[in-house]
Length: 163
Image (cartoon, rainbow, N blue to C red; front, top):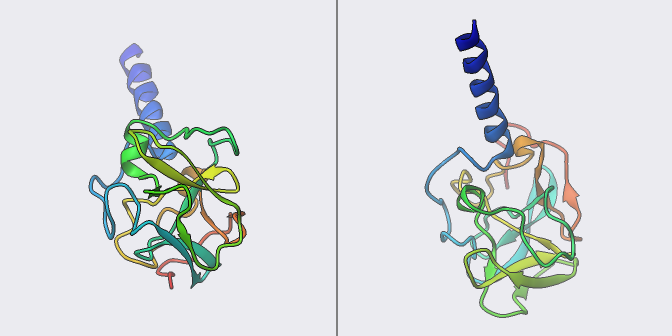
């Protein structure tokens, strides 16, 4: 009986890690660089969720519910950071087209500058294979695409939706 309880607890712990979105998922970035930079710029794109922020390569940009606005740090570290690459910039003023939220930067995990919108660090998702993909939307109930105003969009995308 104790082996069954231990196995159940182990399985439950693994499920929690998967929901967090930091322990499992695709292992290689798709459609962009490993740092999520996408050419050091941000713009908007029209999707089934409305207009959202994308990086310079058209990859959807996400915010993480565990981050705190204006804290100057990212809560996504370790394996989380490999699944959700920081959108990085080489300057403190990345090129922006159509984004009305306040753009800034913080020191990124692993070095460099991570872009923020309204004080929240932004990321791409390695599970998004091409521009227009929204596979990270609602992941674990804590990852959300971003409207041009910087507000997270919490509605769920329909299967096969994108640009």
